[in-house]
Amino acid sequence: MKKYLAEMVGTMVLVLMGCGVAVSLNCSSDCASVENAGTVIGTALAFGLSVVAMAYTIGGISGCHINPAITLGCMLTGRMDAKEGCMYMVFQCIGAFIGSALLFALTSNSVLEGTGANDLQNGVTMLGGLLAEIIFTCVFVLVVLGATAKTNGATNNFAGLAIGLSLVLVHLVCIRYTGTSVNPARSLAPAIFQGGTALANLWIFIVGPFVGAACAAGIWKMIEPAEK
Image (cartoon, rainbow, N blue to C red; front, side, top):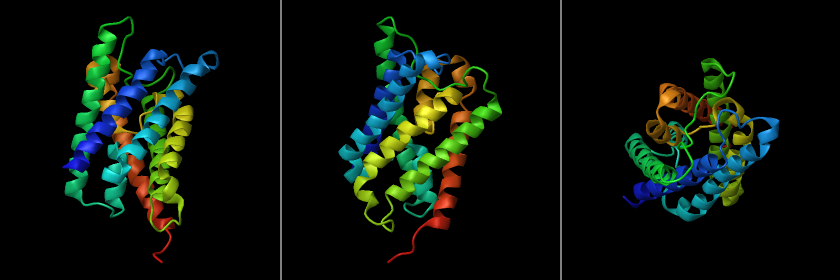
């Protein structure tokens, strides 16, 4: 049970801090332009640093997935069974709702608006958004699988840092397309609180990351070093 609670707390922190910075910096559908580059950089750093912080806080307890896409990747590569994986996902979503509820309470009592929900950015089609989520989730989950693999040398000693920095990189590229999800739990809770087109397009941020995670699992199985 401690593993599940750790995943809940970790996901809560990720959503509260990452989405909280996105709201504070007003990183909306108009933020990903040259003149607003600071909002993109700030939001990307917030999500990446949240992952690094939680990795070194709960990594030894649960592995710090705090993302159903990562959990799916671990399931498909045989690192955990389906029952445990499903419980991880449930508690990740619970944590995301707690984080979003706290952020909603804060913004409702201030001049700020929104909960940092993902949505298609200006000029991006549904197909474009779906492809972005598949591609960048694949890259992100592949980094996670490689950095934490026991067969990949000593890289797992720095897994938390590598994963957090890769999430920063993914956000820097993907924010212009979807606001960057690569995490179904991170998208689900804010969209429900925010409603509107964020809720209507929510399926993109659930299907895309799961497909991307499955692709990453397949790629890792092909390149994974043999057991020593």
